Image 1 (cartoon, one colour):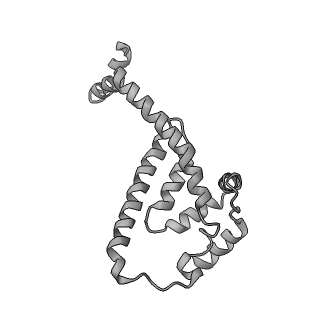
Image 2 (spheres, rainbow, N blue to C red):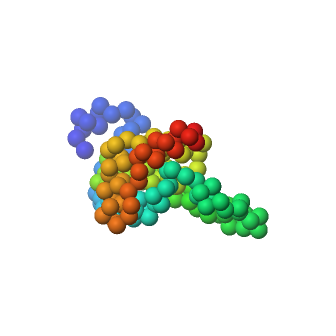
Image 3 (cartoon, rainbow, N blue to C red):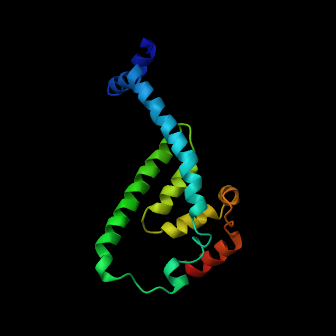
Length: 163
């Protein structure tokens, strides 16, 4: 690293930048970037294609009139929910990383938001999907996978009815 650049960095940042620019760290970052790039190219379209067309327009249990989950399976459901949220956090971090590394950063962040549980999730996701550019991208991925597109009219109608 050039000495003129090191002299302009704060003292606390110099060891971190020096470590980051070591050849072994750069190679590891390159390999990580390639793996995340390939994983996002394969995984994100698969997730978006497998998403039900009514994901944003109706809640599953209400639409199917299913009874509430059985009390005997609460441990399994809790474990699955924890695993889904852990995967969502990992995807969120990878999505943020792929904003600067090669990959589908915004789509990966969107998938992470779909997996995470937090207050206002459905409203936020519906707002994101209501954007014509995002909806067009998701629908083109779904079309290539042979799935029906998400319907924007239903999205906006459902948003006003349920929120």
